[in-house]
Every structure is written in structure tokens, then in C-alpha cells.
Length: 196
Image (cartoon, rainbow, N blue to C red; front, side):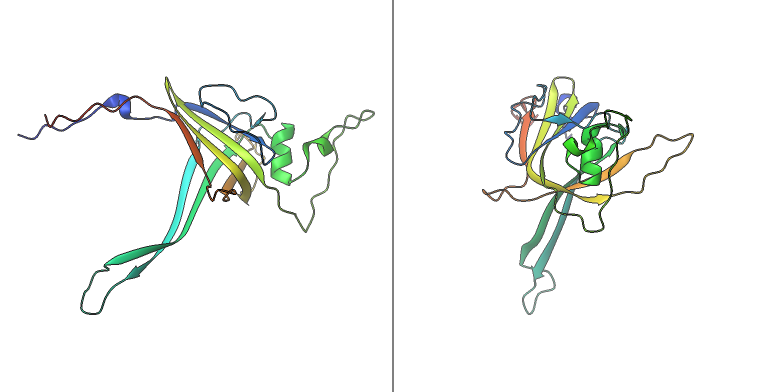
């Protein structure tokens, strides 16, 4: 009889986590279980939908004459994205990334206490560094995006029975080394497979 190998401690549930952003060039945090410090700024509360780590890939298949299945495939597109819904829409950092405005420009007027800004019809690129941590007890995954930009923003609903949130998708761009995402994980060791 076949003995199916299973190990519950090798599974990960996105029980908790967070996101931070900084200017491009910021050094990656060293561990997903350590609080990032300045220049990293928190994104605050993220909706219970958590973090979606996306893979968008295309490939070209090459099928030789006389065969009906390909004998080689070439990846022609490989994009990594991160999707979250930010609930702290009054947080300066969150407003800054949603509207592509420097955080310093969102300081309230000293006299009136009002914050004023305009949305441009010609937005400029707004690349930033990003850090995401997914935590499940002592197990954690960290994702460092050295250069990423919000590539999609959802509509924002203001409603009595619904939390307003900014649903954003961040596309990771390659850095000088050609890498888009760096992983720093704290995972349990996989036991040696003995065949039984």
C-alpha cells in the first residue's frame, strides 16, 4: 500500500502580514519577522483578502513537422505582480501611492487643517521599493521588490456598510541585476524523504 507523505508544518496560511514602501534604492529588510524601519513606511491595514502574488507569463511553443505536441517551449513574457486592498485611506503614505503625489505635498495647511491636491491628466511614473511579509506563526515569507509601480487601481466605493479601500496592483520591474522580486523566507526544514 502507498503511504502518502504529508506534513502540516510545511503548509502556509496567510494568517497575518503587512506591506511597506520606500524610495527606489532602499535596502531590503533582513527578515519577514522583523519590523522594517525608516526609510520604510507602512501601508497600514490590508483587507482580509490578504496579499495576492501574481504570475503573468506567456510562452511560444515550437512543434516540429510530423509531431502533434511541442518539443520546446520558450518563455516570452514573465511578469510578477502584488495585489492588495489598502483600508487606511487617510494614511499619508497610502494617499501618496494612490494619487502619485509625494507624501510631503500632502501635509495639511497649518491654518485650516485641510489637505489639498489635484489629480493630473498626465501622471508621471512613480516607481518605489516595496516589502511584503506573510506571517504564519514562526513561518514567514518576505518579498522585496526593488523597483515596482502601481499598474492598476480599482474604483473606490464610499458606502455605509462597506469599508472604503484602495485596491492596487503593483508590477515588479527588473533591477540592475535583472531581478524583479527577492525572497527572504523563514521556513521549517523539509524532512528527508525515506520512501516510507
